[in-house]
Length: 250
Image (cartoon, rainbow, N blue to C red; front, side):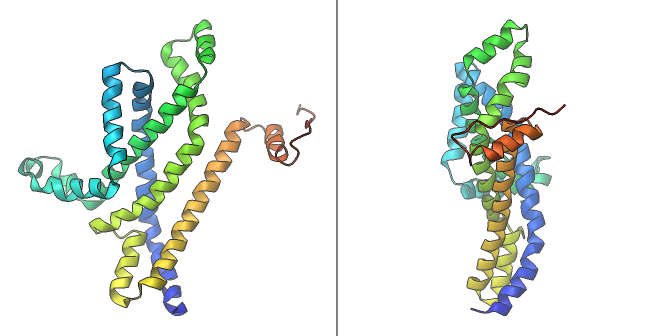
């Protein structure tokens, strides 16, 4: 094992972290915004609309993201109408093709995750909100979705980790994120072993940070961010058989 080459890779590969994080964050954000209305339609919409959303998520979740990326980047270029349209300015750019593919993929997975969370909200909660005079949109925004998001957060954390790792597919359409930089180094050094070990370590670091952030967010949401409740949440696993009491803050 060439430690000097690994050190060189450790210096070079982090330059691709910015593009990896950009693709990941933008894809997750776009996918989440798209998935929220789709999840409500999937869970509570009319049968026809719900079935249409199910067909979308079924196809996207059931096919490899690499195939979707190739179809979008290479396949659409074969259609004359696409090349002549105003969308060709975007679709010919590998960054936007990768971002669109990742966003649609994330939206499909997140839709099903949120749908399960929405269906898990107790009916008594929504009935109580209705009895208070809240309208359907207010109930969805203030009651149903916050509870569903808390329920869905652990599963959504898996989607975040999966998207970080899935962003490596962008290297197949010439983008120089972490994996793209690694492949470029391998083409000049012919030493894939050392370089991809470093690349794997960088991905592991990013996913570990993401997992920790999701855990902290989950704990914060479960305690409503209150300092006393946060202390109780930290102590409760260590003392499962004892009731913890604290003096309320003034």
